[in-house]
Length: 362
Image 1 (cartoon, rainbow, N blue to C red):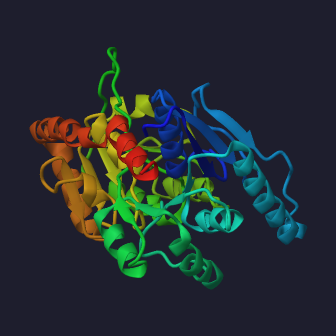
Image 2: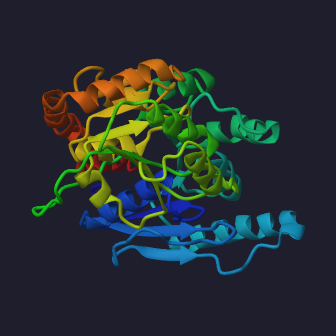
Image 3: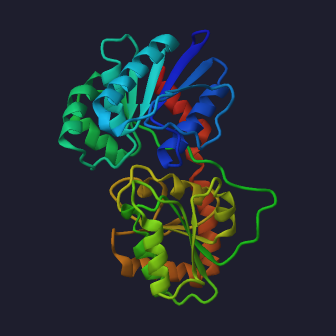
């Protein structure tokens, strides 16, 4: 960090809407504000998109060729070559790759090059990938200059698997969500996340239907992903339960700040997480959060009974009870809201960004 100019190369397939992509965009923007950094963002996926706002100081490199699914091996080789040549051209002081299975790809592309490559695992530490991916991971991760995980649990698991590697746990940067002219609060239970099966929005809708909550509404912000057409499935469930006036599906939203700021409670029924950014954003905006206590993520941010509730995964009776308690008790909501804002300050972009820089520019 004492060099006149530190070139940092950040690699990710795309910047589509998603938690991993949001973190990468936040870090790229923060790194670019540090005077001694020259930041390069390299996108190499099938069809790289940029959903998030990127500071104009960040140099963006994006593969232009399309992706022919009938020639997957050739297309993969193209991308390996693109990564290798682009990094050689940039000649960075350090490389940071995001995404467990994509980290294998980047490490393979940069074999036998002089650049230190740091990899950041973004998913659940207990997730098992395809045997081929796990084999590559076992062979390639040990060649990285360091491994960044998101939680204490992930640190334990990865350190045991790669005992000779440098492993550090760094949480995600959480945006501060506020407005001087914030909208008036409404009786809304909010959930934000891609409409994929592991988020269990169907369970949330069903348990909401059993609440005694006249005048309250459930709002789910998020769009289809992973080729799962869950928007239509959830809409059918809403119709079946006759909840069309009580449950709203907004689809994908460019900004969700307005939803955070006008809601009163945040509900999160995901069973598999790495580090759920939306939980942090909800806390940042002053919402008490009820979440499944899945293996990693929510417990890093939620202190049970203080700024929200942690519920054993799939214990929907308890989840419903905690949600009903918050709906009924305005004083409890207000108390938890104050704690929520305070509790998330340690995940500021500045704090997390400094930890990343210290590790990858060591």
